[in-house]
Each structure stands twice: as structure tokens, then as C-alpha cells.
Amino acid sequence: MTLLQIMPEDAPGTVELRTGDLDVIRKELLGIGVRLERWYAARPLEAGADDTAVIAAYRSHIDRMKAEGGYRLVDIARMTPAPADPDWPERARPAREKFLEEHFHDEDEVRFFAAGTGCFYLHTAGKVYAMVCTEGDLLSVPGRTVHWFDMGERPDFTAIRFFQEEDGWIGRFLPDSIASRFPTLDALLATP
Ligand SMILES: [Fe+2]
Image 1 (cartoon, rainbow, N blue to C red):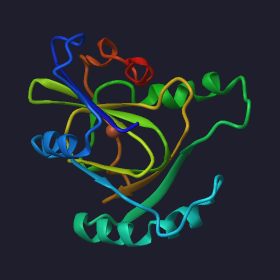
Image 2 (cartoon, rainbow, N blue to C red):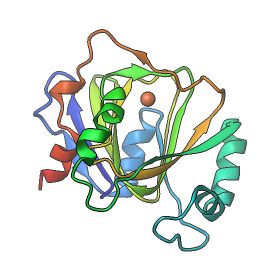
Image 3 (spheres, rainbow, N blue to C red):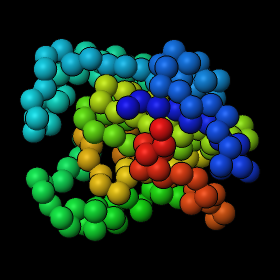
Image 4 (cartoon, helix red, strand yellow):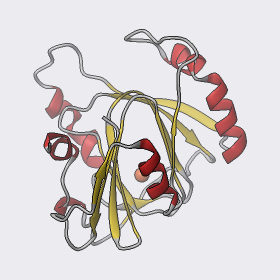
């Protein structure tokens, strides 16, 4: 479920807007310089498609994005549980916690979800924009935008990542992160 929930930075329990309407989401995000696109695969992707197949399915979108943003490097990040793996939440915890606190990068954070779900929390203009991305969503967050990312208690996604420089993705973490006060991905999805 693609979803945007906006909360004041000092009132995590107050929901100013919660919507799955793509047009409304795009407009709200454009107001803070963030872009959301919906991409469609050139051919249907089978479950378990390898990196080459994922890249091939979205080749035209990828080439356009690289040209527009000057992204030189593209890779695929996967967090995929083995079927019926009871230890997955525990094994995935270190990866989840890595970006759960507020940080920024010198370059843009550009992610396309070929499968699965993840939530970007954009902290800007006195608000927190919780953007839940799912299959088909491309999110482009400008460099130096303060944010955090939650892949949830049972991480499961395949994402294409775009980079300008080899080390441009390195996170610079803020000393007084507000992230833990806000609803997690699982809490956002559990809310009717
Ligand atoms: Fe980040």
C-alpha cells in the first residue's frame, strides 16, 4: 500500500494528512522537493527474479533517471526472508536499525521498489512526512534532506538504488534524532 502520512515534528500523534491518492501524494512531496513516480515493468517479473532480470524489466526508466540525475551507479538492495524463516526478524534487525535514526547524505537518495515495502520519513519544514513505498514506487529525496528509513519488523523488499558517487550514500547522523517518537512502518500499516 503506497501511503503518505504527515505529522507535525513536535506532535507525532497528530495526523495532518493520511492518503493513498497518488496525485495528492505527488503534490505534497513536490512542495518539499521530493519526487514520487510510478514505474511499470516492461515485462512481468517472476518471483525470485535475479538482478539482471530486474534491471532489464525497468531498463528504460533506469536510463532516463540516470541521465536526468547524473547517477553513475546503479545497484540492487535486497532484504528477502527465506520461506518460513522464524529467525528472520532477528537476523534482519541489524540492517533495520542501521538507518532508523535521523541522518542525511550529501547526494540524493533515489530508490525504486521492484518488490516489497519500506518507509522513508522525511523531516523538513516543521513536519515529518512518512512515505510508505511499495512495488512500482520510485522516490527521489534531494541530498542533505534529513530523513530515516524503516524496513519494518519483517523486512522484505527489492530496491534499485541510484548513486552519483561511490561514497555519496554515507549517512551523517544527527545527535538528537526524533525518529523513535514516530510510528514505525508496522504501526503505520496497522492503522486503519
Ligand atoms: Fe538515508
